[in-house]
Length: 383
Ligand SMILES: Cc1cc2nc3c(=O)[nH]c(=O)nc-3n(C[C@H](O)[C@H](O)[C@H](O)COP(=O)(O)OP(=O)(O)OC[C@H]3O[C@@H](n4cnc5c(N)ncnc54)[C@H](O)[C@@H]3O)c2cc1C
Image (cartoon, rainbow, N blue to C red; front, side, top):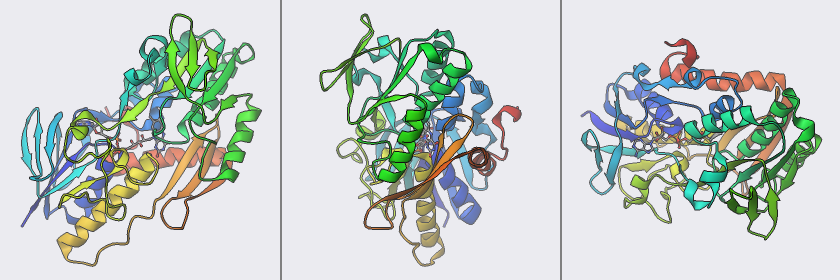
């Protein structure tokens, strides 16, 4: 019997999952993939938009281009999820699933940091990255603060990338000498699971003259005085404030029975929730791994393997190992961090110094995903 699989969210996790299911068992499943947006944008492409390297239209991959056996895309907003009955309500209809997969990512709570909306720029959303890009283009030098505003955030390397790219951008515009760049983050070091990797990244930040306040958090911003207030009582004046906002699960998830303490708990081996036939992958879960696209992809591959084994009656796949590759842009070069969160007693991270070869590898990471998910490697050229 054909199984009705409903996948909520067409981001890193959702796209990887439907691709694998379609390739392996496309004739045994009837997959509906639902997303409120019309296109996919890589997280790292938001930095390209912000630093003026690419236009937004050049990095948007259109969901209409998904042509996969057994998969139908619907552009609809999900309004409610009932995991007990596996029923989903959207602004376009009702869906009943045999298998339900929630891959709705993380949202941002800009209001959680008083003054951010008025006095700074969040750059983690597509529109935020565009607005921050306009502010950067008009910036004539001064103090820049890049600040992680909550304990959980997407892509541990992204704030480091951001300050290094601000450094490069201001250097290219001849503004670096009359500017300061300050990173504040609640993390105790750049990559808390590895002192060696953190030391290597700290050396790169030092060389670029970037001041870092680790284990510290901006709690509010005074937009009139242009001062960021830290929880430890310090005050940092700024001319340009770029913030990574407090993250939360999407409202539709928090309002459902799936959420506990704001996120979806899963079995980290299979990504099944406590509701039979309901899985969750990616940033929306409280799995003990960082929120990152490469991680969401590995989780989706695990769920796909679990579902394929159940459909084909083959043996269960090995549990998710928490392995992912993270790239950190340092300007024209890219560093690589190989992480493994679940295979050993403690998580590990291995650092590879920045090179232009790794920059090419990172580009290939992006284009290979676009080819598998959308059938082309350059959204700008897809028409
Ligand atoms: C600046 C930046 C740089 C990054 N760099 C990297 C990097 O170099 N490497 C890396 O691995 N990761 C990186 N990331 C992180 C990565 O983008 C995310 O971790 C990844 O996208 C998570 O995948 P996901 O499938 O869980 O969620 P997402 O990719 O966020 O997908 C969730 C989808 O759900 C949809 N959705 C949400 N609510 C609803 C609703 N109510 N109705 C319908 N649809 C809905 C959204 O539209 C979205 O398409 C970066 C992120 C940022 C912001």
